[in-house]
Length: 191
Image (cartoon, rainbow, N blue to C red):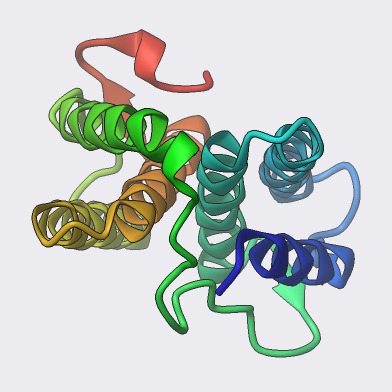
């Protein structure tokens, strides 16, 4: 998939996303924040794309997809059709002038995701459904961190960066929605 196709997929998903909770409720405000963050990453990604920076565009779109998919999975957001999957095939290989930046960013984002994962603990009581959601987020971030590491060692840095960005988006949204307590490195999160 080309990065521009990812952007189109992401933008189309966001345009048909709704907030099902009634206005003036806590869930509506939380959902609005999640959707606002996903849209902010869409906007940033488009800005990077227009300015000729496909590496940062890629990272933004996948980070935003993490926020969006968290919102849809948690029920905070709804969409008329099944949510878009940005991982349906390998990403386009970026041109040689972008390789050094891609190598640095993929490596840094893998480290950031690992640090972020170790910087949180579940906030909800283990007997609650919120705890189950927090555990699911930790599982998703673990899977995408592993996938990112595997892809990086096999030389697929575009997909490695996408995996780490996506996983961090999930974790960041969970932290922002109160499912985790930050125990270290608060600067790794949007709160």
